[in-house]
Amino acid sequence: MTINIGVIGTGAIGREHIRRCSQVLQNSRVVALNDINRSNCEQVINELGLDAQIYDNAHDLINDTAVQAILVTSWGPTHEEFVLACIKAGKPVFCEKPLAVTAQGCLNIVEAEINAGKKLVQVGFMRPYDSGYRALKEVITRGDIGEPLMLHCAHRNPSVGDAYTTDMAITDTLIHELDVLRWLLNDDYVSAQVIFPRKTRNASSHLRDPQIVLLETTRGTRIDVEIFVNCDYGYDIQCEVVGELGIARLPEPVSVQTRSAAKLSTAILTDWKKRFIDAYDVELQDFIDNVASGEMTGPSAWDGYAAAVAADACVAAQNSGEILPVKMPPKPAFYA
Ligand code: NAI
Ligand code: NAD
Ligand code: ISE
Image 1 (tube, protein in one colour):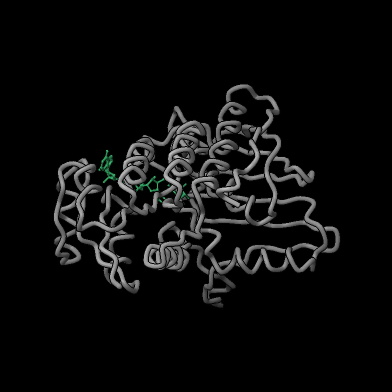
Image 2 (tube, protein in one colour):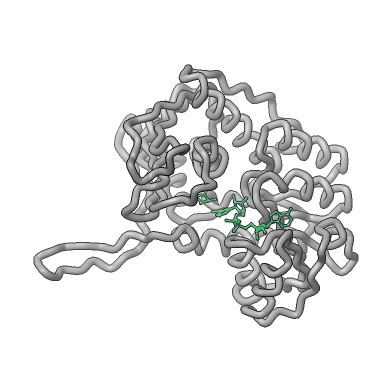
């Protein structure tokens, strides 16, 4: 069964997802596009030779009976409105992170989904689909390194544009760690603190970069995450778990080792699109398969909400400089 997909937001990741839905994945076809900038849709249709209709209004796309499932890949502040409209229309929706830009926005989605009585939402947290993170989780779950005591993580981008603000280090970048570390440890956060080291000269004048986020979980595991979005040298994701019996590290992406000009070296990626390219394929195939079977199993609206609750606390901690509580309500049975 081929699923007819409508895509809202045909920017960087929207185009990537349209390409994979049209050329890489099984049982999916992109039939409708919307973007606030119509020429973005025209460009992607021409580039990929798509037979898709352009809608000037996202709500018309959502309500088109030919569209069976929706991808929301517009920028973060638009997500809540579009996801709520998909739930109202009773259609499955894959929403790029963040699910909404505030915890309250995510809660509105959680409540709408519970009221609809059916899981319809998958959030674009792709790291739980990454083979490296999966292998790391297996090592932890098997008990090879004993109980996890501390995590040292880094999320580094080579550079960001001028529109990137200090809070986006949390809501746009750290949000991936807030999701994947919760999944990795099978635990929730109880407190957050943010520290600002000396600023890099490569950051724009309004941006505080790098930042260090310190998190504590309900079991007392301590996590430090360095966010450095103008690190210059590459796109680099690190995660080291220190356990009672040993240490486990997230595998590095495959890269050929060379010996040349008196140097032993391996290349480091520079583009986020390539670092998790396989994980994006697996997450979206999972979404399409779940639309076909009628049962959503990927990162849920509750996972989007949990990450947003922690993100809200981190943003408040950026401003106050204090250690702040992360208060998660109990998980509703609907998401058990
Ligand atoms: P982008 O700026 O390249 O693309 C966003 C697109 O949405 C633009 O074409 C814009 O015109 C369109 N848009 C904005 N408002 C709209 C509206 N109201 N209605 C319709 N279209 C609208 O942004 P990018 O990098 O593609 O990011 C999009 C989303 O994907 C963000 O939520 C971002 O956080 C997420 N993302 C996730 C990644 C991941 O690793 N999972 C990686 C990159 C982005
Ligand atoms: P982008 O700016 O390249 O694309 C956003 C697109 O949305 C643009 O084409 C814009 O015109 C369109 N848009 C904005 N408002 C709109 C609206 N109201 N209606 C329709 N279209 C609208 O951004 P991006 O880098 O593609 O990021 C988009 C989303 O994807 C963000 O939420 C971002 O956080 C997420 N993202 C996720 C990952 C990931 O690794 N999962 C990576 C990059 C981006
Ligand atoms: C971007 O939106 C992403 O999601 C990338 O994965 C992340 O590394 C980057 O910092 C974000 O801006």
